[in-house]
Length: 122
Image (cartoon, rainbow, N blue to C red):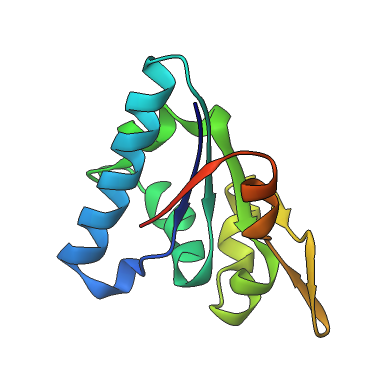
């Protein structure tokens, strides 16, 4: 099986956003442990998560760090719109831009589907 997990929740939105992040990362962990092909991306306000997850003591940090090798990056256009570009770059994640949108590029949601991924948005 192939899974693309995109985190959209905004870390500024409290417990529900944290729950969405956790559930997305748990699905990624479970799929990887089962030998599935899995990738994680951040898009929308979710591009703010990498900087949050880099903080010592964050409750999802250990889970996230265990999945870093399957994190593809964060949508470039989204990171710009939501003021997360510096944080994403500081965390060493690539900015994804395979879909032109006006003067910027965003991570495509169609390409993973075309490549056979089941896509999940959290």
